[in-house]
Image (cartoon, rainbow over all chains, first blue to last red; front, side, top):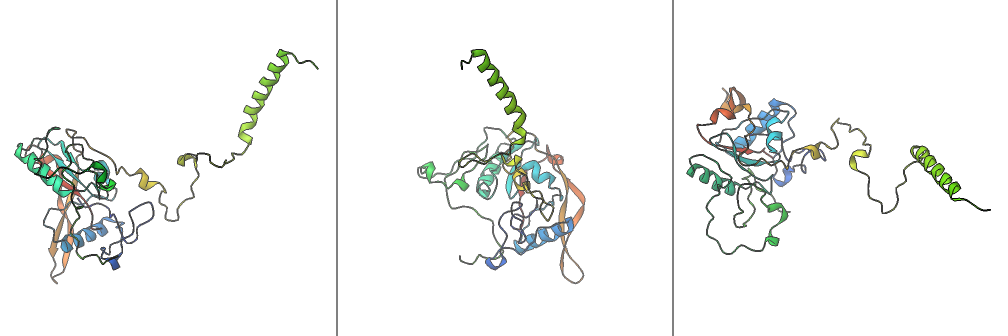
Length: 165
Length: 117
């Protein structure tokens, strides 16, 4: 679901996140003001990241984005009955594809039927560190899953690597 | 001069009435250390771009949908990427639309909300 940009180069204070900086490897994309501009941005994204997933374009009112609280990024799984099986925390901290993958596998293993008690198998791991060691922005706020062991923050693949600070 | 209890009560009532009547005419004074007034009460200058100053705060970013809750339905076009005659990649919106509820009973759906930036 392609929604409004999180870090456009022309980000307005209070409206989006920090402005993107192409000199640091951020995509050179302004906030689309029309649906055509959004289609162009989505096409650039699909090409640069070599995406093969079907992409749906949200309308300029952001109707679906708002219904799911999808901005800046988020993952939702819908079960066979059309009900929410998993709703991640808001990005970037809550955007955790590995957790969503685990949940999707669990959902499929359950015949596509969601359940509040549905939880992915926990990977074998050493004892979890104290909760206080987790960064605040890494705390998963999903209502369906227990937290997996903390690891390095997940990020989406970028078309160009960031330069050093 | 001897003041009776009745007189004291009368003056107190008079002062109370005066305070109520004069209160709107007295400008509010920001006292040092006083709690700030609620944001909604502060007048905000219109932005030159016409955007609402508090639009970002009104975004339901922290909205959580509960497991078992009906997923909000939508019907939106897909992105169709093709090459034109010159070999350039062109993106368009599909004529058909994807309706989330059409997947019910057929397969689960994974929605990833995101953008390029």
